[in-house]
Image (tube, rainbow, N blue to C red; front, side, top):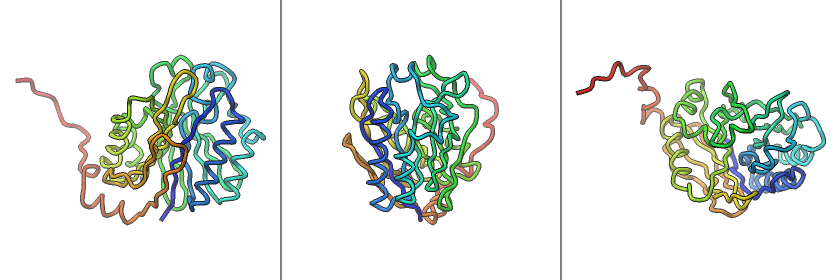
Length: 264
C-alpha cells in the first residue's frame, strides 16, 4: 500500500519564494495525513503565467540550491517524496518540468512536458522522453497536464510497468468536464491509478479550477477537492491494480495495428 496526496493551492506569478513556501505547507499537511508521496500542480513554483514564463526561471543546474530548502525540509520531516511542477532553464532552452524531491534531500528534474498547449510553445521546448518514478515499491509515471489528453502517453507508461499515473496540471476555469474525464479515462484505459494535482485560484490574468483527485484503476474518484486549498489523500493498493487488470483487459488486448481502412 502507498498513501499518496494530490495537493493544490494558489500560486503567485513570478514569486518563487512565496510559492515554494506554499508548497512546503501543503507537503506538511499531506505528510501529517500519512502521505508518503505528494504531487503539486504544473508550474506551481513560479506560477502559471506568461510573465513568469518569459522571465527568469529556476535553473536545472541549481537544484541543490537553497531556494528548494523549504521543500527539502518538509520531505525529510515527513519521509515524503515530493513531485512539483516548475519551468526550468536547461542550457539554452526552457522546459515545463517536474521536480522530484526525495526525503534524503536529493532533488532531480527527470521529466519535461512532452505535449505543449497553446502559447506554452512560445516559451518552452517539449520533452523528448518519458519518465517513471520508483517509490514505495510502486512505478509511478510522470506527466504534465496536456500529456494526459493523449491516451498513448499513459499507455506507454503502462507498457513499461507503471501502475499509477501522476499528472501535475493547470486547468483553466470552464474546463472541469474535460479535466475529470481525461484522468478517469487514462486510469480505466490502463487499469492503473491516476493522481491529479490541479492549480487553483487566480494566477496572473487567468483563473484555474483545481479539482485535484485520485482515481482508482476503474476511473472512480477515491478523493477529490473543489477549488479550495488542500490535499486529497488516498491509499494505492497493488491488489486492486491486479484484480482490475484481470477483469478489464483493454490494455492487454490492445492491437498494434487495426489494418487498412475501407471506405464504403
